[in-house]
Length: 100
Ligand SMILES: [Zn+2]
Ligand SMILES: [Zn+2]
Image (cartoon, helix red, strand yellow):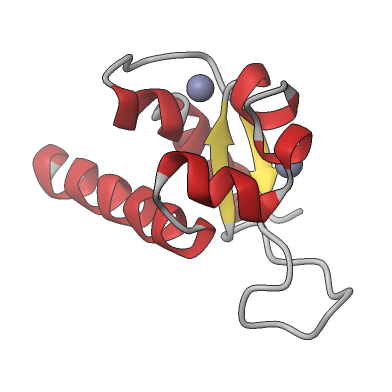
């Protein structure tokens, strides 16, 4: 992992769980979920830039991405993994615009 990637991941983690955020509980300590296979061939590990902050429950729990599987997860929260990735990138952009 490069320095820039590490910095990006720590910024993603600082956002808190993206699903909790959408549900109105901001600031839950997240784990980093690597989105796979979006815009890539099957089985190709995605880049560190295609990552989502998800709390342990929304990541691995019964109501989480890996607990439910991607399709059920997307139905449950009415959002696709791709849309979540875009939301994370927008939130990081906003942060940068505010601090400069
Ligand atoms: Zn969460
Ligand atoms: Zn994951």
